[in-house]
Length: 133
Image (cartoon, rainbow, N blue to C red; front, side):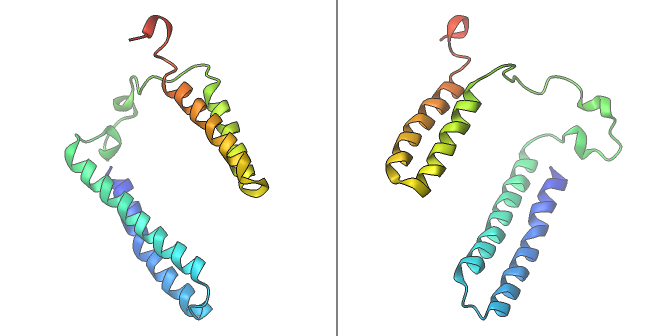
């Protein structure tokens, strides 16, 4: 996680400098862009700090070794659903929520309920049938 940590921590001064330059160019009259750039710098340092903290508490990964071989990273990486319809349902519900922001808040409420159903179905997809607890 050494590389990822430095990518995010290294981006923080860039975003800070860019936010200040943007503020000077616009005469500090455009608050949304300035706030977003400062918040981006804050987000960058938060993610970099999290990665630095996590890197101290876990063992080195194969990609952290500069002399590592590709075969060192072989093996099982996790369990992934081979055919799941729940991501499609969650994405369609999120699209309804975002469309509701333009059309009307009644549609946001409908989309939020559908999104909750889609997310619960996606999370508990493997807790049915023979895998039920």
